Length: 206
Image (cartoon, rainbow, N blue to C red; front, side, top):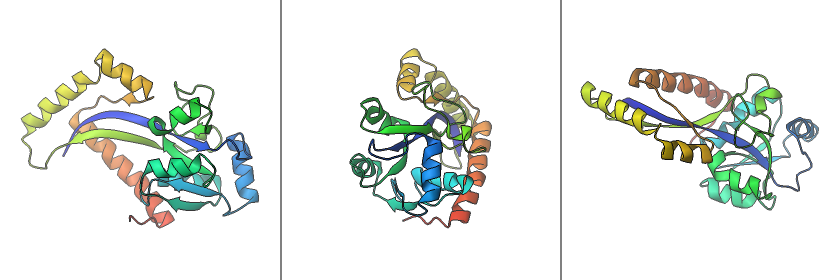
């Protein structure tokens, strides 16, 4: 049972500095000129970064997906260029971007990120594209409504506390304040959207 949403976090499309494309437009052109030759790392089959399948579909390109057992080993191989691109969560990748160890080509939210304001959104080049990670709290199905309401109220109060908002901002996470019903609809909409991508790309969980 949906209780409360907490935050929405962008992913960031990153490549190693050695990769020839320096912009997302150059990346798409390079991918079209080299179909199936770009290796795309992810944290595993069916994981959030694997949802870059939506990018492939909308941009009309083909990349070779390399699933890892977690984001950390995928990023470890991305840094020296053993894989060439990853749609990583902002908290996992931003330290490497800021240090110059990875090049950010675009963020996956509808608009640009406050954390990387000079980096465009994918949707500026690929109309209709948006993909974010989100976090929330759930409870067993038969949890009493008054408990759900209390948890929702307390969670929504907590995420606006200055210290927590500052931490969210540091990770480029957007606090989400919703009722339990609104969060339930959000989950349903996300399930429908990504279900279509999963079926179209024939994604299978490990």
